[in-house]
Structure formats: C-alpha cells, structure tokens
Picture 1 (cartoon, rainbow, N blue to C red):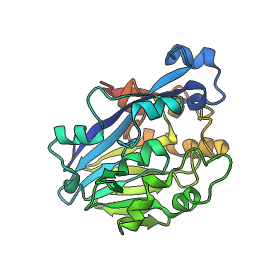
Picture 2 (tube, rainbow, N blue to C red):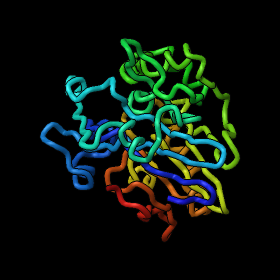
Picture 3 (cartoon, rainbow, N blue to C red):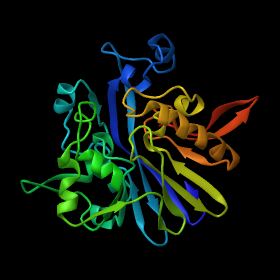
Picture 4 (spheres, rainbow, N blue to C red):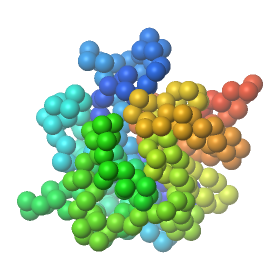
Length: 284
C-alpha cells in the first residue's frame, strides 16, 4: 500500500489457532462462533500479522510474530495450532527483498509472545536479536511489567524473546508517546497491557494506524464491550477504545488489524450512532 512517501506492506509470521473464548472474553460462544467458526478444540484462526514500512529515512518493522523459537510441536503443547504454509516472518520479508540486516527500527506494540517472539532467534547455539542493526522500541512500563510477573501475566511474557535485545544494546525504552521518524509516531493505549502502544503513520494528508491488540478483530473495535480475556485491564481497554473510535472515524484513518483473519485493513465509519468497519483490504 503506497501511503504518501511511505510504503506499508502487511506481512505475516503465519497463523496461530488459539482459544476462541480467550480472544473474545465475555462474548458468548454462540455469538462469536457464528462470526469466526472454531475447530473441534474451540480454537480460532488469528493471523500473526506484522507490517513492513519503507520510508525515505528508514526501513521499519512493526511487530515480529512468534518467531522460529516456537515450532508447530511446541505450539500444540501450548494448546495452539501453528500454520506456516509460506514459512515464517523472515521468509515473508525475503519475498519483499528485505534481509534481517536491512531493518533499521523494530516497533513492538507490547511484549507478549505472539508479538515479540520473532525479535530474537537461534543462531549458532545462542539466542540473538533477529535484526542485528535495528533498535527495538518498547514502552518502559511494558518492559517493567514483563520483568515483574504475577499469576495473570507469567504465561504471556518470556524473557528469551526480548532480554537478548537488551544484552546486545539494541533496546530503546520509551516513557509515553514518542516520535520515531517524521510521519511515524507511537501513542500509548493501555488496557490489553498497561504498556501497550499503537503506531500512527501520517503522510500526504493521510493517516494510518496499526492497532496491535487494542482490537484483535474488527468486531472488537466496533463494540466497546468486546474485549479479550487476556486484557489485564478490561475496563481500561473499553475507555481506550472510547477515545480511539471518534479519532479514527474523523480522520478516515486506514486501520491495520493484527490478528483479523477476514480484514487486513479497513476504515471506521459512524452510522446512525454506531461505528462500523468498512473493508479496504481483505485478508488473503
């Protein structure tokens, strides 16, 4: 997608089939299963969508998926099904003529394993940053929470995904909203995690937003009360979405959904007092 003087290219690390009840939270299965049918083990497809961003100043990668440290066998032990018919993240980058050394900046919305896992990989018996030249940008609050686990969070953060980045001197911690380069900025959006950040692109009078887990799927952006069971602060997620809904609609922003298996990108419109996502780019 050409976007002003940028190119926004959705890429993937595959598809993770995870628990539908976890993804939809308090929404009854009789409702969400009609929207996104589950398999025999109650799992639904969740795209591990990332974003390659080419700009005159830098090559940027938003999110890194699960990475090659998680194999289909490991995924099954964690009650997931991992599908990678076209390979993993680096294979998709290669199809766009991008090598690991070509990436200048990695933006992580948060540090859960399906977002940060591909940021490190096995190489010569060690776990090292996947993108050796890049600086990885994370919220300081997210980093702190990832290293102070509790009963609710210890199954979602894994140090092998990000501690080697700090060890290599490639980690940059942010204290709130921050500009990355001209036309690219990060804005905090607490709820799913306290340190969640979304990525905003502004170029040529246009706006695009990579939501991360502010909304797994377009239905969760349309409906304030639809939040995942994984959100550490579900009421906070609702209030954050309440702020973002009019902001996105008024700007006719292009919204990139990270996990949605039906819609890659859409726009939020207001009709008769309700918000609805219109598809711009279907998944595929």
